[in-house]
Amino acid sequence: LPTPGGVLAVELSPDGGTLAVAVADGPVQEPDGPARVLLYDTTTWAVRRTLTARLGQVNRMAFSPDGKVVAVGTFDNSRPNPAGEVGVWEVATGRAVATLTGEGHPYGMAFVGNDTLAVGEGWVLNNRPS
Image 1 (cartoon, rainbow, N blue to C red):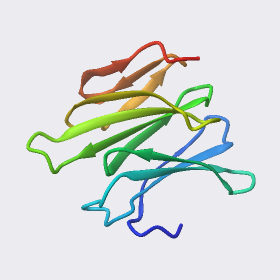
Image 2 (cartoon, helix red, strand yellow):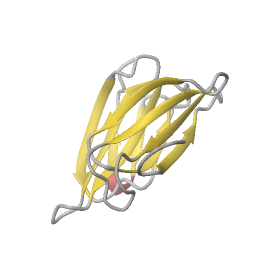
Image 3 (cartoon, rainbow, N blue to C red):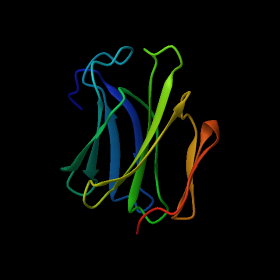
């Protein structure tokens, strides 16, 4: 993939139809601005959607079991207490449906069913919009 800052993370949807690829617009070690997540159709390899994460480093992504939403964990080390954020987007539309913020890096994350996202650092998002 031709990206100035390289690939930060990759995640395949449960049905194998979408590949999420997080790319940096600047150097991977010190991203200049927000990271982008490209959602590829694995049949045609065309980019279906581009999502923009507000913080520059993506360290984890997860699809819901039904593949309808993708969660993207990001962080910013430039602050005294590293800030972490998890954005949740609808795959079909690219619409942001939730944002979690906190201190530290959201290293681990997984969906528990289609409606609950468990995130490292003790974050839990319940009742995802349908």
